[in-house]
Amino acid sequence: MKIEERIFIILILTVIIILIMVDLTADFNEGTALWHLFIEGVVGLFAMFGVLLLVYKSLKSMSSLKQEKYKVKLLQAESNKWRQQLQKHIHGLSDSIHQQMDYWRLTPSEKEIAFMLLKGLSIKEIAEIRNTSEKTTRTQCASVYEKSELAGRSELSAFFLEDLFSPS
Image 1 (cartoon, rainbow, N blue to C red):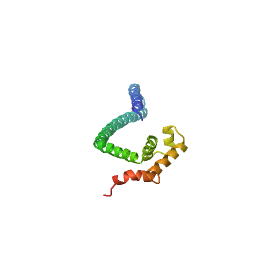
Image 2 (tube, one colour):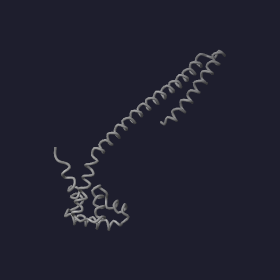
Image 3 (cartoon, rainbow, N blue to C red):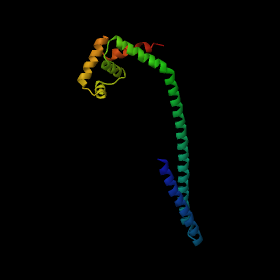
Image 4 (cartoon, rainbow, N blue to C red):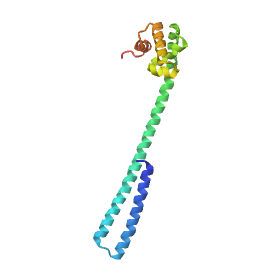
């Protein structure tokens, strides 16, 4: 439930409590039966309980939200720190991959496709990004595999990633 909805319900219940208190006072002064006063009093107490419950839940939700926002900030800071620490390694790996692709004599288009294959994009996604047909993309993929003397996408990925994941 949104905070605005909770506030609206709290206001309605508060108005009901006030009206019940006014009615109870008037009924008491008129000498109304005790059972009638009791029932109205119970309704007022339920409304008051509802207000207290909504206020409690709202405060609890805001506190929880504040904690989660703090956790997100910590995780973002940790992520940024990790990225900064690894930036030189990432650039080094990227440069090494470019050098290997130059060694294989891949064209700029084939390099672009090879990088997209390494990122895990499908033939269809690569074709859409490059505004080419799937057939053209497939042909260029085959050329990448032929020039690199690799059998397919998994061997291409393994070629660059294999040494990164040494057994512990």
